[in-house]
Length: 447
Image (cartoon, rainbow, N blue to C red):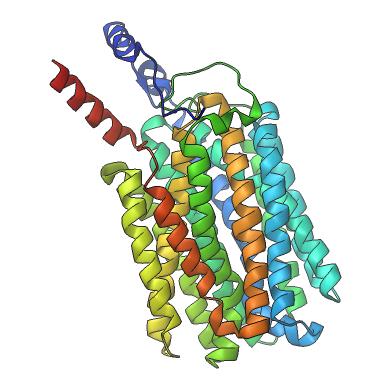
């Protein structure tokens, strides 16, 4: 039977006892311990975690503006492009599914450092590909490494963050991937290609920063740090089995919901560059400008919507901006080759999609399960959503573009938005501020 979002039966009495002993929990950390928090380590660790997640984005999405150039040299069609994008996401999802639990067992540091080294080296190897098969194999291997980084990076961000800064730090960490990978990397890559640098050498350039950040992480991050991980509202510190996560109602619901938002985001990431150049006939530099809206919009949405959900609630923000996301996709589909309009509509699509993904995976997932299931829950969520939303959907997008025209791939992100909007209606609210206010109001009525 699916359980609601429970709290201890004696939670109120426990809080009163903690107040009496001046030992109140704030985000899972005792007030007296928070007072002596190592802020210097938090700052250094957050810089590296932000850079590491940003490099994941660079390695994953720098291929977007390269696709049209690569397609001509390697004789790739739209279906092939979808397969290449889907292979990385499928491998990412399968890897995250298992490494989330692995991170709970061996710690975040080992997983993060190993992942960074492997995917940085493989990104450089991408430039050696001579055909579809080799490129798919290399991108799939990159997905395995990056899939291991995803849940470990989220958990590490919680671990190093002081409780009253967890939300802000998580938003900043999640912002790094779209900002560096979807916004700045396409602009940088387009300029390199425009200057005459081969796409093969562009891939090789990304190895150096990845290896450098991995070395610094190995030196700075602590092997294990559990101080801030028990931030969940479910006061259950017992050991649990891996698949116990599905006993908590919000987990299966938000998995389906996030699949919808990822369908929107990943189909845009896979197909927009070709849509802009082949259907709307934009030049390479113009395409790079419009495509950067994906990153800027996603980066802004990750921070803004996650912050708004602290005050308005996870469920209302998801519903409202889910509708906005759907409207933005429709406007983008019907927009002509005007660069400014394309940029604004694409910005809004990714602003909503990435913000809602952040709320679903990083907040609702973590707040809906016991502390010792956070890694497993995040890993399973990322895994399933990547396999479907990030893996199957780009392949379907490429198939649709190849068979009935690239302008028709927009129906997939529309369907994803509708799915997310419908499912969010059944979620239980988990925002601490909203839940606490409701509990206080219930106690006031009862008295």
